[in-house]
Image (cartoon, rainbow, N blue to C red; front, top):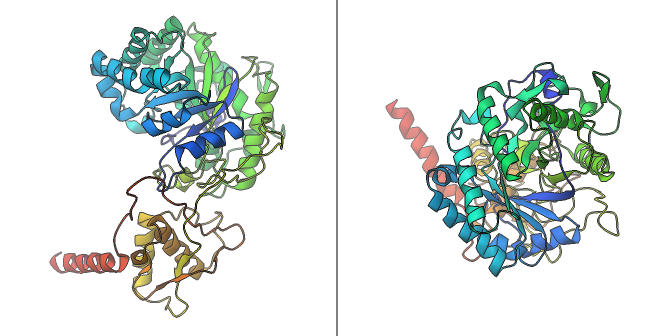
Length: 484
């Protein structure tokens, strides 16, 4: 998921957030975590929960090797920072395909079906950074797949945000591609059509709610409780159908109405914002599963849907530029535990099956000393330091830890830093303020996590002794004040 455009009208927001395609339910597997689960554990999690497809954001060797012989259909990714290289050199594309696709298919028996060329490269917030390289990269990668003899089984596609299309009327029937990239989109869509490639789009109703307090909440869900929108006799009572059909109309309007569509990302976060919570996430994701399980499709595109949840698991190292919710999209927590009851229709129990044999660090936490003074001038800088290097996105109004008092907030920050640094003694030495305890400080829905054991060799702390570093920082600030 990328950063989202924020200057969109309410009428268009009703349409900008979803879409779907062919037949299958998968999940995005992101790896921006300080302590990721072993790839083998994730693959078992996918298989035991009946998720038959997985979408990756890179081509990590260990990840792909773990997917070998699993029969899970894989969409492997080329990051945006590689688009220029792929665009400028056919040989570079051929080399990448050979190493990251052909080798894994032939040697590791990985069921690679798609190559994602970039990730939402046309977001308006990127200011056109990838406009000149995305299409040539797509062409070169597809040519490389054909040359490798994979053209009929592995397809290239560019996962795009729903902001690449818009509606002149605020209704699905007014759909067309965004004016500033209209010609580029037509070139890409024609290339898709000529080569039998799918259109991949990422859809987020939550974002519409996040950026607009007046957004009609019920329209984001599938319960039928919202006021329907009438589009020339066609009724839309949820954002998914309306947004999907806005894309269909855009394709039809330009002569490509039969192009297959994949929902590359769809989901709802569980923390980091007042609307990012367990109940809304369960309601949305269960509603989506129920909505697509019948295979009826949308008014403009009947049929089954090919979609990937965003995401499988929480990632505590993701950028929070779009919002604190960015680290909480998973249907599973960072350690592979189900966040809520979700029936995918793929397990005998009708619920999510958690990761097994997860190995944790010792059950101990770093908290504020009972003798510490809250007016100690080092409290604020210590909390800021801890949160800046760890993860405090569960703190704040409307979040899972939003009801903590000041002591709880400080302890949460200290513990987050301590756990992220593998519980090293030096990581709980905030000057005169912190202490290690074996009494779990978690309260209600607010979980003071104990980190899982790093599975990778050479794992070490992120930074040094916070007390020493704080002294250096405060000293530097004092010095700068004297010379300004």
